[in-house]
Amino acid sequence: MTGRLADRNALITGASRGIGAAVARRFAAEGARVIIAHQPTPERTAEAEAVAAEIRADGGRAEPLPADLADPAAIARLVERAAATWGGLDIVVANAAYETHRAWLEITAEEWDLTQAVNVRGTFLLARESHSHLRASAHPSFIALTSVMVDTGMVGALHYTTSKAAIIGLVRALAREIGPEGIRVNAIMPGAIRTENEVAHNPDPAAAEQRILPLQSLQRRGYADDLAGAFVFLAGDDSDFITGQIITVDGGWVLR
Image 1: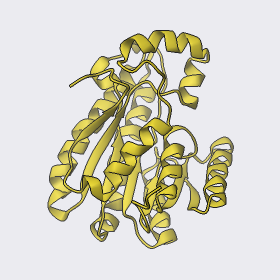
Image 2: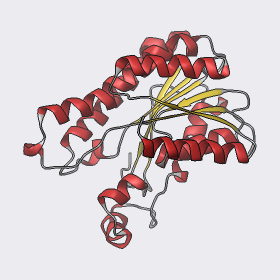
Image 3: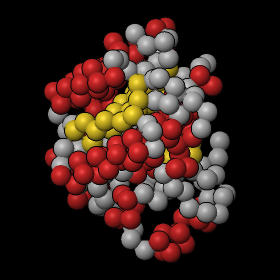
Image 4: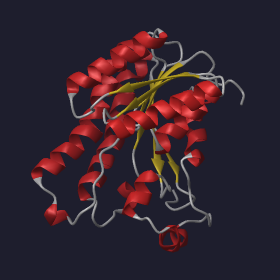
């Protein structure tokens, strides 16, 4: 690694597994001090502690912090604890999301509201609460996560897809709002990535591959590590003149 994020402080939500954990590992390998934010459940807590231990064993710096992103007060506490841990924040990654799959007529109002609360309101509040810390940073970067489903649509995920479309609008508008302060705001749009979440919904890897590969230009599955480099790019100085953008990492599924 090249130390592109040396001595920068990063907060990553949903970092106990999947894409968030891969980003945490890569950020730490590039020299960042990492806060691994996670759901306050026994399972996610154990996973976050394992990721932090792995990073420390490799010589990196990482601390896990729990937070329920459906609770605005918990988001405020998370940001303050994260900033206090390392002495400020330079990078904030809004990766965590709530996702369920069901026919659109079966989505309850409560499920719809929870999806928007975690995915959209949670991203907004994370940006708002971290704003003063990012404004004080010499290298501020806020990175959100959307989904290729915004462009492709997907049966059985109307509430989730809607929330991820909202993220794109949020990123573009927020980039305008805080660009004059030197804070960059961008998003990553993953394609079909084989994470623990996909395994839960599609446990048969062969069946998932048969369905997904014909849609992609690159004929292999994507994994969490395939996205980490894009996050490093948006967090570091190589993207210093880039803001309000959506970077698609999907193996050539959606072509622009």
